[in-house]
Image (cartoon, rainbow, N blue to C red; front, side, top):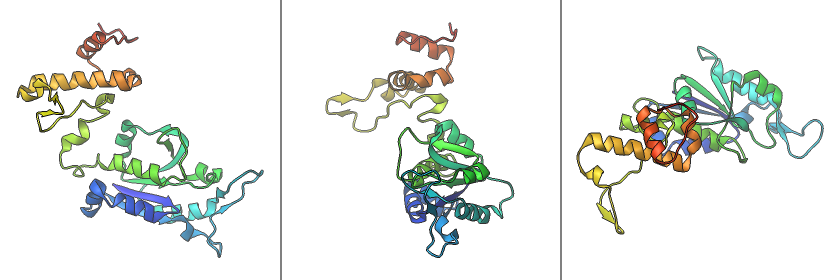
Amino acid sequence: MNFHVLTLFPDMIVNGLNTSVTGRALANGLIHLNAVDIRAYSKDKHKHVDDAPYGGGAGMVMQPEPIYLAYEHMVKEMEKPPRVIYVTPQGEVFRQSMAEEFAKEDDLIFLCGHYEGVDERILEEIVTDYVSIGDYVLTGGELPAMVMMDAVSRLVPGVLNNEESAEFESFHDNLLEHPHYTRPVEYHGKKVPDVLLSGHHGNIDKWRREESLRRTLERRPELLSQANLTKEDYKFLKTLGYSSKLNQE
């Protein structure tokens, strides 16, 4: 997986991803990072990359030409046009299924905006995906880009030590993950559920599935309408007071 980032702050991207799991993946060559400073492609002698918006208003807008020149240099050796992700609160909200889709690509380009935004003409010309990480505004697109790269990276084969960790976790089947426990058996008067100590893998799997369903219903009930649920799942949810419009008897 090759990540390319068009940014005014390449050091922020490099320093952020060169730690923990993504840092190990970079060191092992499982993912690759190319953080490009848009300012380096400015033809202005002072390396300006922004200007006042037409029509007036507060703030500055990033100019199209430095972005396009950086993009053009970035893609010239790629075999096919890449996905270009513009991180913006106006985009579709990022989710696990989107990370899985992005992980199938060879190259991903992230365009990080700043100031009041980016000239619309360059967005229309190069952007394929408008993506948000939530309904709030940040100072720039670098943190959202790193969030998405982290989520995509852990789906790349070999990045995680335990391959099951990428598959059986929060949002698998569009459900939240079940609770986890480790030693000691009792802590502050709270014990590990007996079923997890039983050694009966069938019962453990059943408990984990039901706890996943319970937690999703309690914390993110809107996910259930898109979840991959079995008839047994619906029966269990019904005992918790969940009613679905789907006919699952």
